[in-house]
Length: 55
Image (tube, rainbow, N blue to C red; front, top):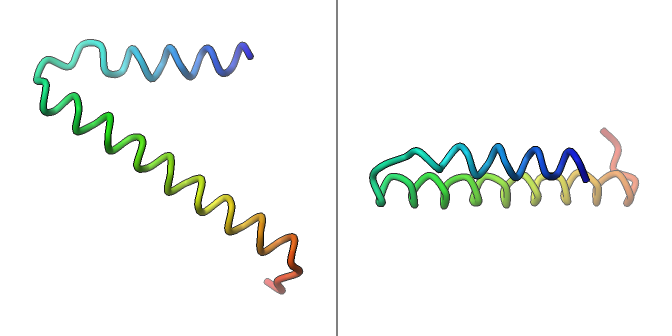
């Protein structure tokens, strides 16, 4: 839980001082898009491990 709070504070502080509204929202959207892509890659990797894919 301590690590989650640290990551949350890091995420919030990264966007706190960005002035332009458009730039701030663009980077927020881009970061969530990257998190989703990483989750998809992680899911595919775990799926391949569980189904016995030969590397």
